[in-house]
Image 1: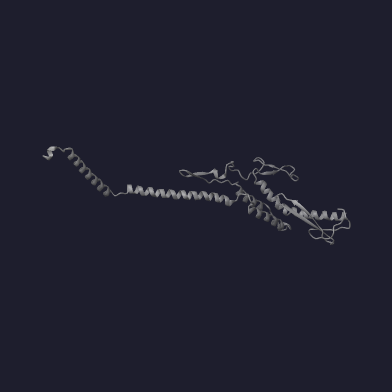
Image 2: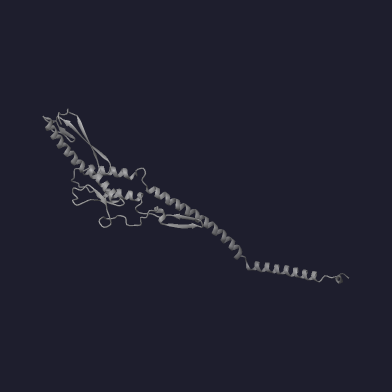
Length: 265
């Protein structure tokens, strides 16, 4: 800093946070004897002003670290833990580490240990509901729609607060804002509603097949009833009538067989 700023002039510092969001720290120069939050005192020399700016920036960054940065870190940690594979900090020394590496079951807690094949989740369970119709109704707990809700709720639950912490409310507000945005589901992210819609389609197909099978069963039952439910008396009468007709037919046939000119003389 080569010259002092004017009273009311401000300087902005834009910070990239771990969850991909940005925060801007704005510090305003003031000639007041006691600068308030977000202000720095204009010193008698540029060097003194620079020192005051450094002190104000350190204070502002410290508060940001205990509020928005903590919230952003919780969201980022949720992304890392629920990722596939999960990410872990490269260490030791963990206090200064910044890089991450894919975790394994040998060194990292795996939240999901179920089946995880390359095929769609629905294909993990299927059933034939008609001669030519099969439906798929499988699920995986690590489907994006389910995982997304789980990881955001977990991030919200992982952050603790103290009643004596002056930054607790600001930190909670910062985290709540991020979780609310995430639970609205960004574009391109699978939703629970889309999973339910797919399963509802399966349920609809099953209902249609069930109705069709019921109608077929009723038709066959009626037909079988017509065959098996005829009264014995009716069956006997029809057999007797058929026997009478058969005897008459046989007698007629016998008479025709015996025809000769002698019968007409």
